[in-house]
View 1 (cartoon, rainbow, N blue to C red):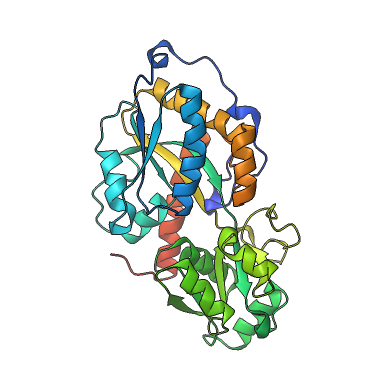
View 2 (cartoon, rainbow, N blue to C red):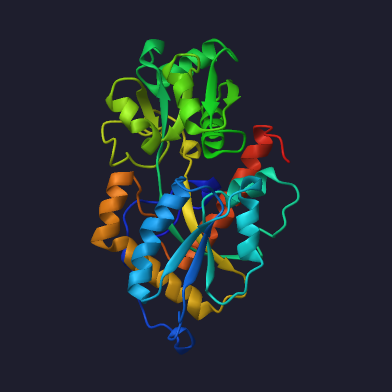
Length: 327
């Protein structure tokens, strides 16, 4: 199974046998001999934090060593990411994060080199984002929303979780690929961004299904489309943006990846990839993924590395095109 690399297009959705194990070189046979630290540069309860805890708990059981998930939020995630970049390349400190791409696009000066200080290992999974609006707005389909936006340029607005957030970048990708204008209203959290749409003050938002699904089921939000290559398992009746007539460039993949410091021995990288892939296929993790609306992103370590590089570059291009201010 191969990651689609063109401009950050989402990966295919079947979890392939590329995750199965081969023979690990002898130098990694003894690794790990002690606890491993997985740094999440976001607060507890964030999407990356939850996914990391689910998967790393299973990986730890497989390896016979505890994997301690440590939250190190701050400075847009760069503090935690930098801690991993500067750590010893021995396989005992890893990064679980989904925003190295946007951090690279937003920050002109980072304390680390996005491409040269990390080794992309594997994706833990992706969570679909959905375009939502209030029923009172009267939009039944994404086409209707886009038509309204084109008929009245700049009169519609959208909410996000903040400048540079996944909801911001996803909405900008949607807007640019569909060719309409809309005002951005950033909030400091998903709850406020979604509440503004529910109240009717915000015209639409692009949010994680995990955040919006209860409100959609209660009839407080209307789901217009998911911004993914295929329909979300948790929302099988909601069409994709592509089914709504948009190009593949509208897809935004919100994923959590695992990264190791540069110069980590290849054998350890391979073994970690192997064990995480095995954990993701386990019934325990699959059950939790179903509850959380997380979908696997299959692929080899090399495929994920290429996907990551292409995705980072796509975020840089998107930030420039959308004139998102850098810091």
